[in-house]
Length: 195
Image 1 (cartoon, rainbow, N blue to C red):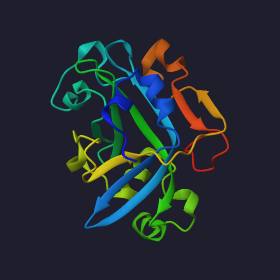
Image 2 (cartoon, rainbow, N blue to C red):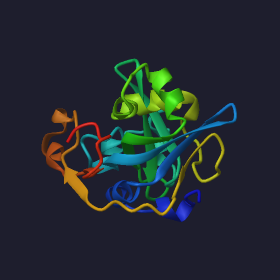
Image 3 (cartoon, rainbow, N blue to C red):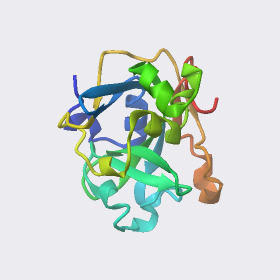
Image 4 (spheres, helix red, strand yellow):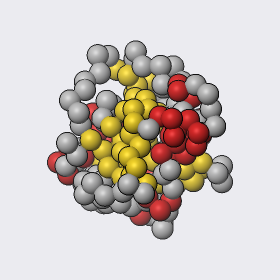
């Protein structure tokens, strides 16, 4: 079942936890690439010094974050890796959830070839790795994930046994916000980026 709008209209921290176990789906030329979301990070808008929309920064790049929950927000890091985020909350409250890692489910063999790795565990255990494995690019930015076209998120009823809450990765510049426990992962899953 494709997640509907109501699922996304919530606080970014809550959404980050609720997305764990859901399935990210990308369609390319009729082929579905699927992975279970096993790691997320919440970015809490205008108050969060690690967030692109901190202090109400509104640019062409961050405009997607200002949509209501349930839209994709994709940006490039280090000039080479795309990061896939999901908007949270209500319109003009720019909260988002970074999808940090997936457990590959469907078309794993194709993902292995795309990523040029030998072990399944290395396919999507990081935000840049998962976008490459699923063919997610800037063309997928600002897409309504509730429509089930091109890219979306499904619920197959899976519920994690235990969720680990910890600090986010790579945000040492964020002062007191680097200590927030806004990174979440399925504790027993081996596909996470960093335990």
